[in-house]
Length: 315
Image (cartoon, rainbow, N blue to C red; front, side, top):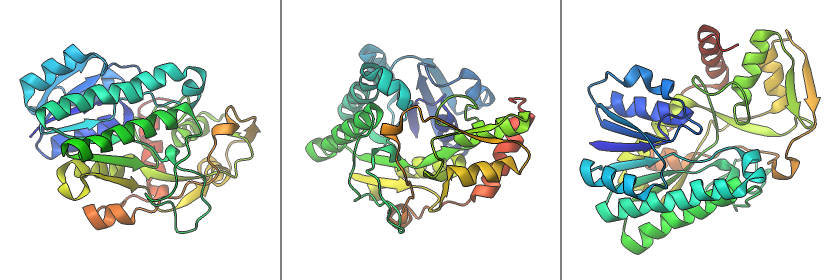
């Protein structure tokens, strides 16, 4: 199949591209490189099914029109987005334009050409939950940041196209994803940042008290979930979670990664108002509809990520 991946030069996008190529699909990537990196795709440029990497903006309607007109895509995996919570608080306009308006432009092309779209959302849309069985797709949403608000708006637009036009649409909400090729600086890569600091001998810095928990999903499991959501009609019109089904506090994560070799420090939280205290995924719906479940546990995922950071000299 001809497949388009927006945001395909990003961390998760790169692994989605790899999975699609491994499955024998013909892949085009559109990315403006605001978050992604061209070198993430370097190993694929000579692959016979890697057709084209276009540096461009999802808000460029002319570019999108030409891409969709020329290539007869069957599936669009829409991962292109502004993803930083603090950036969305500082500059909500950019996040809204990229995540909501940009999604509308992609949806319009998919509608015109009847292309299935898998929309990448986030677990950050959920309201706080202390439920031990984990957060299901029926759990209330509560946008605690403009990033989460923009994603919910885009989700609703995507699902409206399923209802109004019969467009095959799937909304995926992966929980906190980590692994090789994640940036080792900035927000969103707590595992990568902790590992880099541990390898350098630097302190691991925790925002706030560190009691907040995260459900950490290894990136290859995440990519398999995203790709298979595109293949299956069972999840058309559905919102589907993916996670490990196990949460860990940031304090416990720091202890696990530090191995007692470096200091652990607590620093003031940069956006406490947008923190979600407990994130634990219930992925039963993905298991039921897609036959998907995670295969890489946290300890193995950390080992693989540490090895990649060490051998990539990113310390």
